[in-house]
Length: 454
Image (cartoon, rainbow, N blue to C red):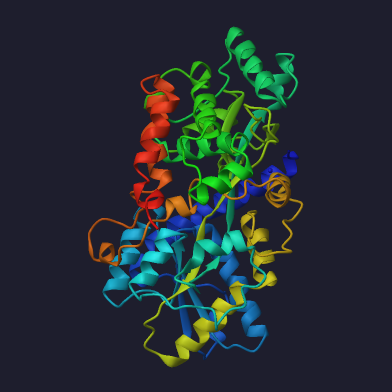
């Protein structure tokens, strides 16, 4: 999902996105048939068929390469890849797994999602199946439960700030490197009738990630560790400062921002069309920007620190690739283990980054030059990452799993973690209906399960 770009690079990515949209439509149209074989030469195999489910239709070419490479290494198998709409994926997967008709391998949501399936005994520990020693430990933690590993992390997502180079140049503004310069730039843009920043008040999940992007440059790693170790909490002055800095963005947002976001891509579209100078967004959304406007000249920067600390990048593990614990056919089970083992290799990581243009958590993987913004984000992840993270996928976002939730109609979600608590406060903060101290107290109050546990 990615680009300081050249037009050629962006157009290549745009074609990939268009192809992904078409693939998604085909996948959904063919759901009743259970998906399609990953490789064009699938008919040549007499070995077992391994089903793989995902919410990412754009990964179909990845699984074609996995099938091809495993066959070349002597594993005779067919991979049947099925993509399901992200909005219904969790529910469809849960129903299938409970009914005994789930896939052999599937993508699951990292952290609480993986742990819930593990606690229910529905996915298999992979410690004896795959060599995960090449995984960065902070990434691997989101796949672990009670000392065992239950999946292979496949992507690291980052949040940063994107800026329109032309808008800044036309206004005589240099790329800001400090919070003071940043707010001064937005004030100048607003005085000229230009919308400084765009956001989507309807999409609190993304606004929470925006808050975390500000927090990464505001909360020191030592303070983040103290919060993780329960020696401090979210009322710490540094975290309150990040809430106050986020609130300071309010005067510079577009009109009627509270009602924006019903389609889910208004922020990226507006930025792509030159309707705002800045957005805080994920590397995963640059594909949408490039699709809307392949010729947009834009750059990426870390959110400047509101309190003068070294700017850092926030990140999280997108999901894990897990294996069904109840595969009835021994040949399919053995083939599935081969697939899982392969997903932990550098060869898989390189293939993933080549197809998706995203950061693999496998050490040593290189993102191709055709994705310059992703390469930049990966460099920041290696050298300037918030460590530890205290938002989504952090220990404070991972309450004890509830296996019974898999038998309920409600989809798996973290309802008492910090990520959800932050979603409660982002809009009231920007509307001035909640102070930073009140927001910090609210977040802290939602985390009694963490801070009071022994």
